[in-house]
Amino acid sequence: EGPRGGHGSRIFCYHPHGIIFWGVIAGFASWHWKEVRLQSRTLQSCDVRLGTISFNNLVPVFREVNKNIGSFTVSWNSCLRALERGLNILIIPGGARESMDAFPGTMNVRIRSRRGFVRLALARGASLVPVLSFGESDMYNLLKMKPGSLAFRVQRVYQSLFGFTVPLFWGKTLWGMPTVMPLRRPIRVVIGKPIQVERFEGDLRSEEGRKAVEALHAKYVSKLHELYEGHKHLWAHKGVSFRVL
Image (cartoon, rainbow, N blue to C red; front, side):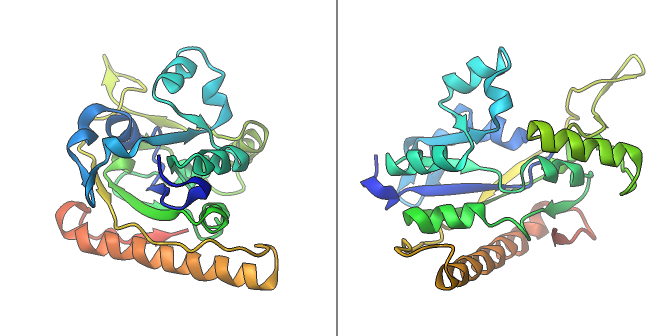
């Protein structure tokens, strides 16, 4: 465990969400990361805990899997408690809304209006670690719906009620029928350098606090963009641009 109060803890921020974030499941929640090093430690030894929506902790099987890998409900208080214990956490800032933009061959990151993960880092002085997943959005086909259409509005209502939404997607086809099995596509997960964050001792809702939040958010987006630019020649689709929504 790191020092109490969040100092030394890290918040891993995974982008993009995709449909079912297979990069997280096959990566952070598997044994593969015992060979990956973050500075002087293996990622496995960092004891990264996955934050997930409360619904996943209520559904049988999902609930047992989440408990087995040490995940927790991704709420403000739960994240604060985890950081207070000196744990490292992984969250997906784009959330369920980002899954609506997970079209194959794209890199759409919905964090323009997201500030919660930044406030969390400032509240506990925890480092922010940008994590970018090339190929996450290629695992499924996604039906594009016109904004304002009935199906589009139904999905927004569903998300507001349950905290997540169900995009209209399909993966592999068996005997001519679409299934939820993912397509056979590679996913390459790139972990950026931790962004050191000084704990903000004042009120984050004050004018000074809002300035600190905006400054850190701008810095994070810039570092995330740099991470994409530094690896796009290896794994990004040709002609695809990094889009912050």
